[in-house]
Structure formats: C-alpha cells, structure tokens
Amino acid sequence: MNVFMIFRVAVRAIWRNKTRSALTMLGIIFGIAAVIVVLAIGRGASLNMVAEISKMGNNMVMIFSEQRHAAAGVRGAAGEGQSLTASDGLAIRRELSHLVQAVTPEVRTQMQVVYAEKNWSTTVYGCSTEFSTIRNWDVVEGSFFDELEEKQCARVCLIGRTVATNLFPNDDPVGRTIRIGNMPFKVKGVMGVKGVGGFGQDQDDAVLAPYTTVKRVLQASKFPDNVRHIKLSLYSMDQLDEAKREIGLLLRQRHRLADDDDDDFRIIDMAEITSTMSAVSSTMTVLLAAVAAISLLVGGIGIMNIMLVSVTERIREIGLRMAIGATPANILGQFILEAVVLSTLGGALGVALGVAGAQTIGNLQGWPILVEPSSAIGAFLFSAFVGMFFGFYPAWRASRLNPIDCLRYE
Image 1 (cartoon, rainbow, N blue to C red):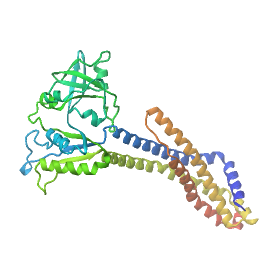
Image 2: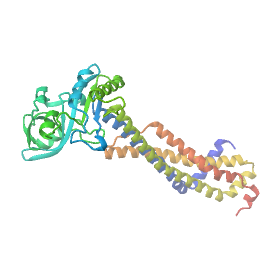
Image 3: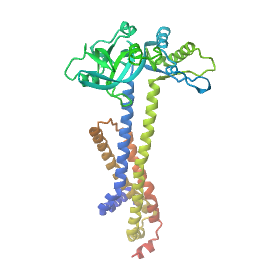
Image 4: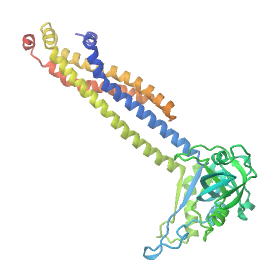
C-alpha cells in the first residue's frame, strides 16, 4: 500500500467520525492559537518598548548618585548621601567636550501646580538649558529658559502638553503665571508631545524649571549643588565605552576616591536599559508561551486517547487488511498518518485563529503586536510532531495485533 492510498484511508477514517475528530482537534487548535497570540503580543511589546526607550534621549547616558555612609554605618545629614553635584556635570562638559555633546544635572519633585481655579499634581524637573537637546524634546510654543535665568534661579518654567491641557484648556499658556507649590512661576513655553515612555509613564505630564530654582526655591535645600543624577548626550554611541571610562576616571578624581574605594556613582546607558528590559520581556514571553504550550500537551493526550479508541473500534478492519496483504508497517503508517492529519489540520486552524486573535486583541486594547512567520511555521510543524509523537503508541499497538484474533473479534 503506497503513501497516497494510506493517506486516503486515513482521511476517510477521520471523515467518518467528523464530530469526534473536531472535538479531538480542539486542544491542538486552542494550544497553537494561544502560543501564536502570546508570542505576537510579547514580541510586539518588546519592540515597542525598545522604540519607546530610544525616544527617552539622544545618545543618552545617565549617572546616578550612590548613597554614602559614614563610619559605623551611620548615615550623614540630609543631602550628604548624594555624591553627585551640578559642578560634576559642568566638569564633564568642560573636560570631555570631545565626547560629550550636552550635559544637564537633574532633580525632581512632585508638586501641585495651580492656575486660576484649576490645579494639577505633576512632576517638576529641575534641569539645565541643554535638557531639550539631551532628551530630544523640542519647545513648540514660546522658548526655553536661558543660562542667565538658570544662574539667577529665575522663577520660570516650561510645561508639558498634559499639564497645558489641564491648566489651560482654552488659553495660551505662554506668558501666564502659575503657582508651583506656593511660588509663582512664569510659563516661558510649552514642550512638544512626547507620549508614553518606555516604563509606562506620561512624559508630557511634567514641568521643567532651572535646577538651581528647584533646589533653592522649591526644595529649599541646604545642599543646593547636590543633584539626584546627571544626564548627558554623546556625539556618537560608538564612543560609549571610551566615554564611560573617561567619565568614571574624572568623577573618581573629583570625589577623591582611593584606588581601593568603590565608585560612589553608577553610569548607565540606554543600550543597557534596553537590553535589560528586552531580557525581562523575553523571559515573560517564554513563561507565558510555556503555559500556553500545556494546551498542546493536553491536545496530544486527547489525540492518543481517541486513536486508542479508534484502534479498538476497527480491530476487524485491521484483521481484514492484514489478511489481504497489509503489513504491520502499513498499519503503523496508516494510524500514525491519521494522527498527523488530525494534528496538522488542528495546527493550521490554530495558526489562523491565533493570527486573527492577536490582531483582534491588538486592535481592541491598543497593544502592539508582531506575528512573525517563523513562529507560525514553527507552531504548525510542532503540531505535526505532537500528532506523530502521541499517535505512535496507538499505531504501534494496532500494528502488533494478530490478524486471526482480529477476525474473531466481536
């Protein structure tokens, strides 16, 4: 019996029990569909996250202050724990101008902003005049504050689109005076729409002011030169390793650290953040795909169960085939092929359902999705493997039957 004849017999056997065959395929269909949906959403979210993180800055590198402790583990006074200063940023800009395009110290505080009868809680960022260059964030109305205003601790600010919408739904914000906390600030401009950041925050829900003003006026800090972190923009990311090394040496020198002292700062670049977030996303996708793959295991067990039932129901048929010349290999091939046809048909339907489901979920929830052909093809081939693997034992049992006993079977 050739392969074509075995295939025809297998399809006829499946067609004779359409309802049972359809129910058997459900496990495979939903298992494959679940895997496709999970991989599509996970891959799409990963790529979208990388794109959003890249929007956070232009060749950006961040330097964070590490907490310092006094002898015997006693922490110093408030503000002493921050090892970075605005002067460090100025030194980096001055000494490493061949590598660094722009530098801004940065501090932030959560404040209530008020205009007339409207108020809004937002994050106030203290920064320098080079902030917009580093963050690749342009002013669309008005202008950015200048260096003189930064030095004089001027009470001026720029607002993000979210803040502008909530405080000035019908007015032009530029030139208006708002209160940040209890202090009046003049709005110099409105920033362009930045959108949701890589960590899910609304980047437009922000107020920008000179860091000198935020430290001295809003925070009334006893250590006005200390900053939370420093952001800088490189001319090229090809110089990243060199820049990180030079920045580290300069800061160690400025902070008077001995050779055996640990750094009291951390240097993090966007590539490192992107890599970390992608790794987390990939891990979650793999875990979810593993959970979805359990459905395939259940579907495979269902195929094995139905094939065992089919062998029992068709014992006399198996005996007749053997009596007229069918070999054990023919019987083995017939039942394995029936299982493979069941699983591959279920796999094809599962791929179609998975692609449609991923598109539907993406459209309804606004989630980014990416259905890769390789994942669809891989899922389909895996479904064929499931059919072959779980169909082998029933087929082997059928091929080992004695034709005389089969013909006597009632």
